[in-house]
Image (spheres, rainbow, N blue to C red):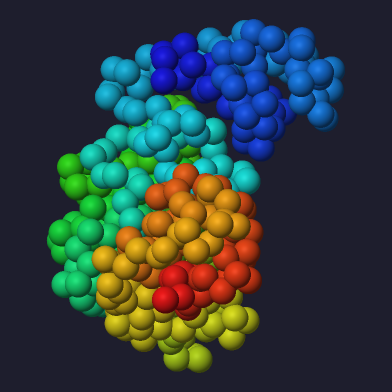
Length: 370
């Protein structure tokens, strides 16, 4: 993307009263952030729901000035500005209706690799919870070393997940509740620096943003939205990890939790998630792999005879081709490989199921019926 387009996309995030949903709708309708500002007076005729108030809000020189300042900060510090239209933007997150229209990223991990998980939990981790992190990731690396591990760089389970991922050899990304001009908490700075060479740091917040309480809730939706599955290691009856789990469910992502004793304060949240059917119970890495169907080995040389199905649309044929090459794969991987939005993918897969060509498996997996 051009420098000008990046600057104006940042500016769109700084216009009071716009927000991510309206910002994305404006980008989609007009085609570029530059034109959103340049032709704002013409917006009511091109996008239903645009009022004179929104047009007036876009007359905001201060937002553009702040965006220019932030873009210069990013350029000097080699921070990538990932617009929602950028191919490097997390494609799973792109399918969430409240996805940020601009992210700031410093690191070397591919945010769109086939397997991405988030590991979250209480800030007051116990020895039990920390050991679960270690055992889970070490065992996972033996069979699936290419997984990207995402968390929030917070105290407790988050930092344990990052550090164990680094030690095990995974790439790991920390999603921050503030700008990339600081690390919070400061005691995690050494780990954060290591992550820049084996993962990265990601945020929607501009430099100078404080790690305010409400920012952590916003941060949690990115943690949930950019991943295939969220794993809650330990959680009290209330906490940020439960919010992340709830959001993952709202995004139709898989959610898992490790159980604990009924009397353990730090396991109450996990037990509640399992009891309320908001998370699947897992006891080991093997359980998780089975749920996600990552252990499935299909005949990758199988190719369906598409001429037998003349009624298929081009998008349905594309899905059939991908499944024929890859075997059983997760719906979010299908979305990435096909570049078909998740809301449309769900409808297409349902149609293919009705035609007897595709079957749904556990863990959001799909495969061809041979």
